[in-house]
Image 1 (cartoon, rainbow, N blue to C red):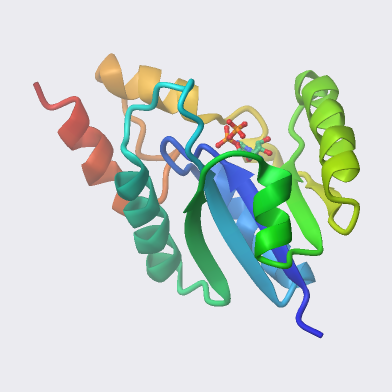
Image 2 (image 1 turned 180 degrees about the horizontal axis):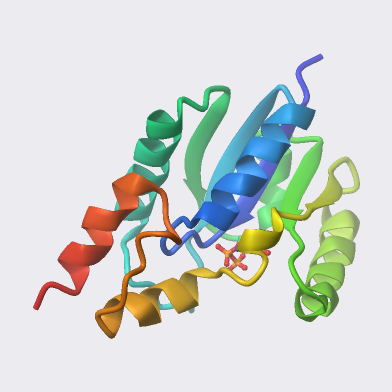
Length: 162
Ligand code: ADP
């Protein structure tokens, strides 16, 4: 049986921290589906299709296979069920992530007991990295190139070129 994991998130944009989790995930599962949740309440810098393109370009650039990129509306648990995922991957960075992630994991288990939430921790160098910080650095003209996969650099630069 193919073991498939869903890695859900906003990925606005994908960072080296997200890539680290994908690489660890693919070591554990046969397939990883990166799922972009299109939560209508959350305002994003990049459109869903821009975010999907950036993830696909980054995977290609790193030569990572067995990973698909999809978008979904509504509940993560429902999408996990739809795609027959047996696991939901989440990155756990600092203690600050813990409470929210625990709530989500327990809620998702109630909604779809067949998927186990699996927490993975990135390399130490990415522990403090998040998409929000990357966008702030880019907006203020700082060097954000160390934080994101190479293909993302031009997309971020284009957003803040004016
Ligand atoms: P969300 O809005 O669902 O938190 P994000 O795109 O911010 O979406 O994050 C998706 C997942 O990736 C979350 O589990 C988050 O903890 C994890 N993540 C984000 N940045 C990192 C990082 N630097 N290292 C490890 N995991 C990360």
